Image (tube, rainbow, N blue to C red):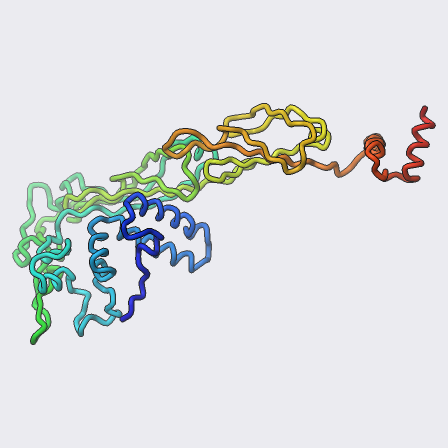
Length: 383
């Protein structure tokens, strides 16, 4: 069946010789651009996000990346190319790809290893959570607490699944490996495959006296409050990883991780572009023409700023070092202040007269009953 999957390197937009850091950087950029939260209802963006995560899941794992580099998608997905209907008439669901290659080349294969123990230590499942923080908390960092439900190693049996004082029996059928070999095929195309041991269901052991606290599972589900340190300079859509704060591992394996996605609440005054803070300040026509001493809000508090006389609408000024701190780095971005000149929407008689005088002095056609001539006649009468 034709290859329906895109090359993982192509998906992330990196070369085959890309470093681990380059792969990680490309993933973060693409994941942020295509995150479903930023494209609600967009199925194409959702599919791209899944494809990006799948590609990163392979290329970020040295063992999987090595297999993929050698054998493409077939090296990391046993069902690839099977078209859902099997391979050569066989059901691929129970076939260990390592055993197939092992039959041809002998021994293990690139980490598949038909003799590997399926009941060995396994890392626990990683968990995901999202939190919302303010603009200032993202800029300067903060500490938040989140509540989550996760599995933890049973304290009564220490993860063994056995009632204290008892031990599990090694499965006689698989001899503790959790898998048994089955002869497949026939004629000139026969090979052995590995499948989950039906007697112990892949655990490699038989528990005759299950732990009363966890029911033999070796882990229990608990509600846990976790403290999350948000680094200064973090941006919307990025995530904080807490190693070992996910679900408990299996058979003595380490716990999974907790990935906390960051959402930044909109600010009433500021907008953000990377480490740059954008702000619009309103001034009067008089202030723009004559200049003024202003107080400009920043994320550090108000600062004094001298507005030059004759400033034009839309002019942008820079406040150095008043932006967002660099994430896990040194220095800060800048704040850019754009001047917006406010035009009065209603004037009283005195203000109109003053503005007419200004307009006449500037050679403008004065907007008053009687025109410019009438305006100057009034001025003479007052004298």
